[in-house]
Amino acid sequence: MAAKGTTRRGFLRGCAAATIGLPAFVNARAFGANDRIVMGCIGMGGQGRGDMGGFMGFGDVRVVAVCDVVDDHLKQAAESVNRRYDNKDCKTYKDFRDVVARDDIDVIFIGTPDHWHAIISIEAMKHGKDVYCEKPETLTIREGRAMVSVARKFGRVFSGGSQRVWGDYNWFHRMIYGGRIGQVQEAWVNVGGPSGPCDYAAEPTPAGVDWEMWLGPAPWRPFHPSLIRGGFRPFRDYSGGGMTDWGCHTFGGALFGCNLHRTGPVEIIPPDGKDIKNLTYVFENGVKIYHGGGWGGILTFKGSEGEIGERGDKNGKKETPPNVHIPNYKGQGGIFGDFLHCVRTRQKPFRDIEIAHRTATVSHLGNIAYWLNRPLKWDPVKEEILGDAEASRWLDRTKREPWSV
Image (tube, rainbow, N blue to C red; front, side):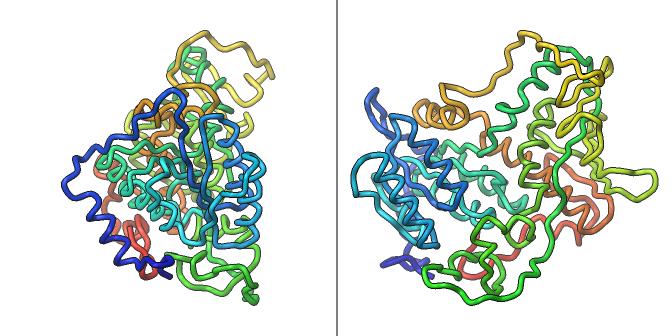
């Protein structure tokens, strides 16, 4: 599974050699007013191509390389790039290591399935690249902490890909931060449930699909076409189900609304069919966030002075929120513009990896509680499950050789 002309050992040795003697913070290229941000894009399925198109809408971005293990995805992506720039020089790759090693690339966009996010992100950052990674940013909690550590060590800008935390849910945030419901006490998040084992029957691997590379660090299993068409999310080896998919959007919105996006719960309690109706996260300050329930659609908040849901209050009145300033995106152009602005200024983006990791952690802890069907105690400072060795083993996964984080 080595890249063309590059073994894994040689790749890592070169990466280490490139960083010997460098300070922990690696300065970005000195961007001038007319300089382009040169981008490589990895993971060119439907979501990846869509996001790439969004980035190409910025005049200061130039996509020069696309990478995917499915030939059809790769062909469509390269054609899209060449149409956009009216040329034929977009380079195509099957191995991400060839992309992140290019000296002329400034930033990497990652739109692969979740089980690849940490490995590609970390290698890109070690090669001096800033990273925009689709959510869920991680498959496990330990991966997230490793990504934060590498981003800080190498001075990289890393933006997670949840545009909905602010773009869709800012009305809630303005209402809450503006004091409309008093002290926030509870939130309900209506997203899908946990992932589970993959039970697809084996099918022949078609030409033009590097199935070994698609699996990568995940356990080996036979090919099935649904997995390369976005149908991987229900399965634990590749993703966390609805809990991490829409959960990274909507738990992210709940955490931000409750001003808990830089910490984590201290207890996670699964439903017991009796007194506990919904999976419940309990935070040190007493706030509770529930998976499911509520009356207000995808998000409901309750405070000391009222409740709000997707359509407003319980009477369906959606008032104009207070004119309160809440720090959000920098620059112009939504979450993509926020990332590009921060690439130039070296500021932390709105969905900085630390905050993205904290959100994903909430989703992962909920999955673990569901899988084991028992309460968990969590230390959000040490990021440890307390007193439960079996649950603690789910904080990370064994990765198939030769891949590791």
